[in-house]
Image (cartoon, rainbow, N blue to C red):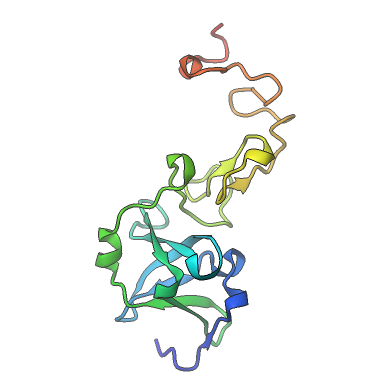
Length: 168
């Protein structure tokens, strides 16, 4: 792919909304991954890239400094990145884990409940960690798969983890 006619993104365009799902190309112009999500702003920004896998399953998320990627827009308006990292170098990096040890992978456009869905925060909005999507429902009112909500949870401590709705 010839990148000479592609327009580099300005610093103000380096936002999660624009960058998520962008293809990432290595030094030989092979697609080596795609942007999963973004951490931070400014010079300390980290880009989490999903590497490997097939159809979004089994991809390994790795974090790289934004300065190691050159983001641009092609003739069709599609955003992509170019890097000097190879696919093997990215695969050799440590797997990226967000707060709470959950691995954040997938597409922001994926349907809820699919393997491509990013982690949702089901707790109180004021406690939502960075990088988690807000819940599409209201966890104070709507019931989860166990039939609970934040107003009357049945599981109150770690010992309750293996109990089912009928156990008391």
